Length: 308
Length: 308
Image (cartoon, rainbow over all chains, first blue to last red; front, side, top):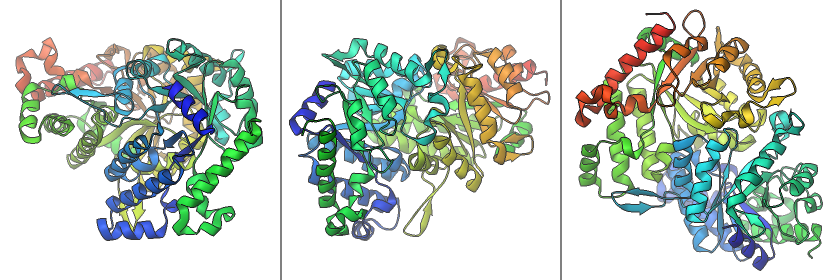
């Protein structure tokens, strides 16, 4: 799977991923009104608006980007209808040729982690038939429980040619509370990074492995350090834009060939129409605003890594 | 909420919680057959069998136990139909007066953690109406992202009188890979435990707070240590039974008054009918086998803490 992602990144010259994290406040009024007319005033209507929103953003950007990253929490908050919209978003993005990174941050032990891995990346067999419950291509994973929690994901990645990104250093202000603490000579995030390389050993496809890592754009020093410490690990970089990460700081996350990292932006793209820079598109043109924001982001990142 | 849980524990003289983690292999053939006739050969039928299974176990045990703990991964693996069965299980258990602990181990940052907290414990407002997406009473939370990830859960606990249990030391064999590493003078789990006490300060209801901790039955030494280190923290103890934790080892998790901990058993209860000790109930009497297993577990735990 990592090679498919890399191929898409090269083809589109865009080491970026669009985070489909539809907060209620991002949804344009006209989409909510239409959905309300068709589906009432409940969670079903919001979910319909979310799906319509995502589809138009995907339609307006899929030729420019290799991947999307739906954040499942933003769908779980709308209950079952929200999760149906999540599943339909995954399906729609895949149909458009995009790699879908499920931002689920799951992590548990043994059979429970296996159930999560099957749910989001693998399949289940019932009555002799096989079903893909959510069927994403890659997923984010929380490492707090150690190898027991990660191994079932590795098994599913092997069996189904999928990939994961394990949380190493997250982009939030308090990520250091535990992740930066020194365990002996190394910080927790360094030790997790070391394990990520190890977990990925059997899952390499050339230079990189199907076991990637999450390192936040807001900590470029850590990015530089971990890029070196994890030579076979693709880095998913959240925190660009709204959270404060700048393009110019991101070069350190990449290898010399311009590969090795993929930068996520969520609200900076999907809520671009709310940003003064794209206000000419107005609320009705939210999808065109997203396209313009993707083009600007691409330019910013490629400029920073010296590829444009 | 913690006081409601304690009240139920006292009333039923049972510091135990039944884990509703329906693996496919636990479901009796006759339930699957019935569901297949009614709902076809897809995920809908498995989900119907899961719900029927849970309902009968709840019916057979709710007068004996204070709480149930559905493990959402086991429902997510069956996709949308599975999550509908999860939601209906939560609703059914609440109707029977049980405290529902959602074992979701969610954890993310800022608005994303807030979305998870709203989804599982709180509510969302759309079109001027308020909905409870999943509506559990308590939930498990992963601390890897630090305070940013936990705070939104604290806010929802305050607003809606709910509770959480934060992963401190998990029951699995590899939990020590990161959790046992020393950060300076203290292990990671000790530091997380310290934060749990701090996060719970504003959420106390008498002795205990609505911010609890997870410490595995498989590590009684850690249980003893953390019981002392977290005097205001209720401990959810997984790993009893199938994972190897024994009743006699569990006294250390409790305070002198027999409170302070609640012990979970999942497959030991819900798949009791597969255990030789309860084979007389046969597959058809799986619910009665669960009831017998609950009575035995209760006796075992109460004996260990010297209450019976």
